[in-house]
Length: 238
Image (cartoon, rainbow, N blue to C red; front, side, top):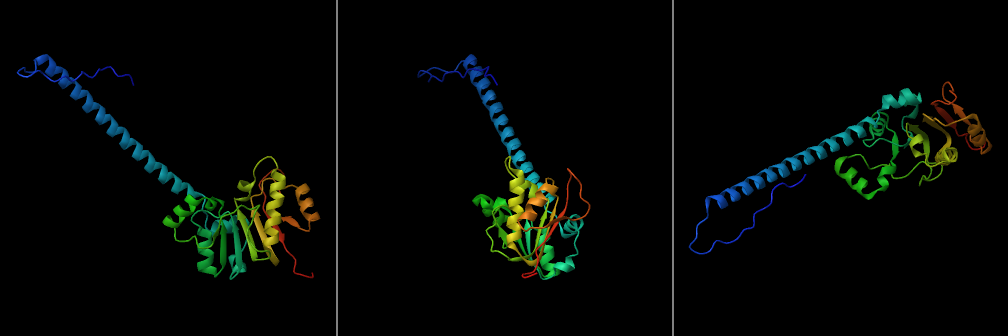
């Protein structure tokens, strides 16, 4: 905004002289302008603080909207939680509040480890520790690079997460790698359920089959659409 007012130079009045009405008017005008400028600065600062507050609220709402409960997992992945009672479960891409983990632990005595790539950032970890009380079993990693022991989990679930792990142009290779990593972490006799897998194709399923990983549509297969997949790891020696 252009400044239409020039600040009058402040010159000390010679001894014995008094301020004229004209100079007094100039000083009054400048005081008024400064007062208005200060009011504007305060108003802008208030707006800035309100914007930051709204942004924080929006971030928390987004976190809640991407954080899904057990019922939503059941509907999309089509399983009975009783089948997973007392099991070791890896949740690939849990929401920030880990609602599913809480409910499975509290109601079905499951041991749930949640994967959250955002926690690789130090600031994100510190913020999580301050805000939430459920980050004890979180792993900071992506699905393509699981820092977990082989054959550690009975069940591996991925609900609305795998697609977000795929980066760059080699999405097919990234998807295959994510499934391979999950399969290595799965115990013999375990099960993997993933939904949605938008880029899964018969060709990819054949490539995985050649690697010893049998992938089946979990429900009706839709070409060029969102699909659920199921992977079972046979028991040793069978």
